[in-house]
Image 1 (cartoon, helix red, strand yellow):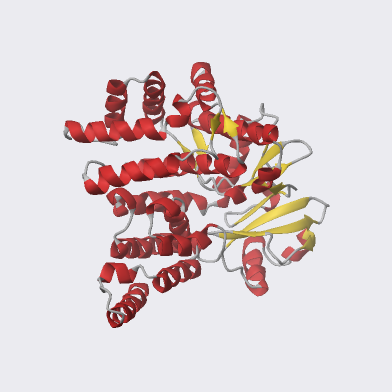
Image 2 (image 1 turned 135 degrees about the vertical axis):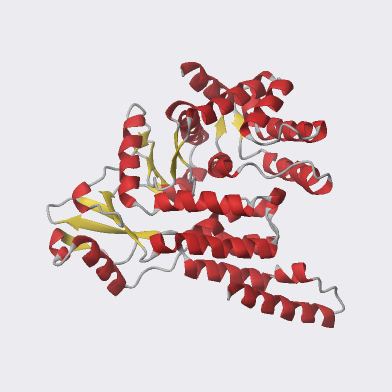
Length: 418
């Protein structure tokens, strides 16, 4: 049905362009601003898996997608239609049983946050605990497969994903990850495990889980006060650098030391406490465990990049799956060039100015040239999608807050400490 709406919109746009004496190529008309808005609206109504895929696609929208499409999808990063009060009552009644209201001294019906598969409410338990309750939208868990498949159809229709990405592979990986995200008991276990992993880092705060009020579809944790991470943009340079260093070191520890990573770097998943300087980590639905061989490949390619060893980088690119063993030397060189470019912060000596860097634009330009003009680069393997989302998202986080960070020193510290 969505494809039909978009096709009809494309036809109408094509007629308008013909009337103006312009070319009416179908693919271009399909990506008109009204059609992009129709797609975003459709994804917003689907919520759940469909909206999550929209967020994933839109993460790099400014650089790799047509402007109208990127602008429309960008709303999916932070918006979702909230549940009506009666629907919330039904969900809580189903999860907690009859008389669930007695468990709470106070419940705020207006959500404090809404995201792709659920929304968060502030509540006070009958014993006085101040809680954040994450309540899942009804039917999300059951609709993951169909929602992802629906979005895959739309993505194939648009045929616009960067580097000829494997839509089927991305969909399969998204289904696997989203099935995990829809299990709030699994997320709670990840949260507790993660809290232990970062227990020695005073700059980080992970809320406690309250198991007596947690179910597979409702998650109860401490309600933690804090400011949006974006508020750091007006802080002193030293504070911005300190938080940026904290987040960059955490990224490296997640990959190389913990082998456990929270892969959704959405700004809404962080809070900043100015008094203590701590960063609050809020959402662990998109947490991934990495197999040891997977991590070892990235250890070796990271060291090779820092050492400037092109041959070693090329061999590790083959091991990871960025390029095939039977691919041409030209393709191997092209992939190696991209790896060295995207790892620029790791090769830079001293503090790297993330906000002042034009690296995203240079990566975009090189990627377009190698992928579309020369046909030398393919999409990375699906199992790396969520890792790449975290790597790109962390760069954008540091750029947004204006942090300057010695990434090279941090990653070497973590690698040498393994």
